[in-house]
Length: 61
Image 1: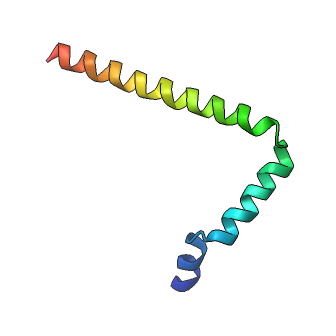
Image 2: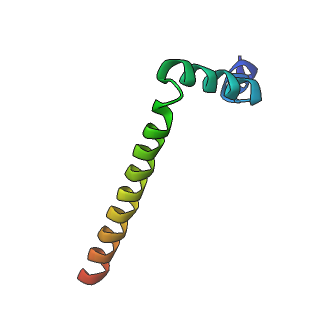
């Protein structure tokens, strides 16, 4: 039973290829760059927000 849970948790190159193909089929090649741009902007905003939060915490100490 434990070996099954270990094998299901591992992602290999074939799984990555299958997932990539599914994403391309679902969203199309033109939509993927737009999605990645949105993800990049979200990460940038998150980092900025955490830095602002740390600065506020450091000022109050």
